[in-house]
Amino acid sequence: MKKIFMASAIILFAGMHAQITFGVKAGYALSTLNTNEDDFEMGGIEGGLKSKSGFYVGALVEHKFNSKFAIQGELEYANLGGKAEVSMPGIKVTEKLNLNRIIIPVSARYYATPELGIYAGPYVSFKTNNKVKFEMSGPNAGMVDPAGISQGEKYVEKFLDDNLKSTDFGLFLGADYSVYKGLFVDARYSFGLTNMIKNPQNDEKMKMNFLQIGLGYKFK
Image (cartoon, rainbow, N blue to C red; front, side, top):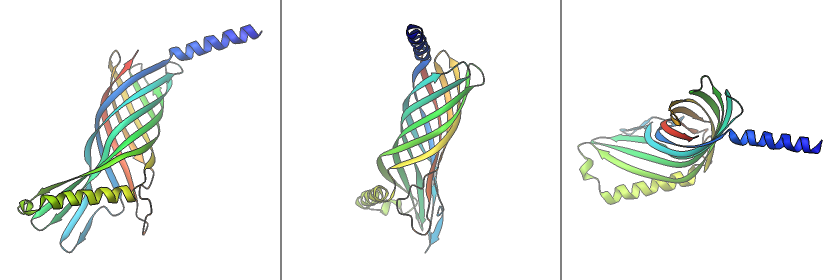
């Protein structure tokens, strides 16, 4: 009897192992920082938050239970964040806020067809570093001291490091489609659920949402 159970376990494990697939992926990311203080106007200075383009690269492992259902885990590096635009008479400052993250998504997958997979699940992300880039435009842009720009960038980077949480959590949903053998196209949208501000004052909130569109390859 023990031999029968052992043989069954070995067969089951072998079957499970045969369903595991590894892959890689990369693509475009469009991220937005959403706050309850997006726009402001004070003393002739106006500003607001906009979406920022970035990228992501990563690896995945998928385990198929059968032809319809699977789970998938991923490890990604993503350039996310947002843009803050501040306008003053004669000049506009665009602050590109690069919140570089390590993202770990885990999804439940349903294959509507052998080629089309639909999925959803949670993710957790961890800060790697925050980088800020100032861009000036307008008739008075050339009057700004480059040393002042560099100092401003460092100030905002320190502000982000000191005031934003190093981890956040959210949910995502998406779909991918196999176009040729292991090659697939992938699109997903992620909703941040964590208030990223460490010590919010006056009920201030900031969450990050991001769209990812890319290509991947599963080694079969």
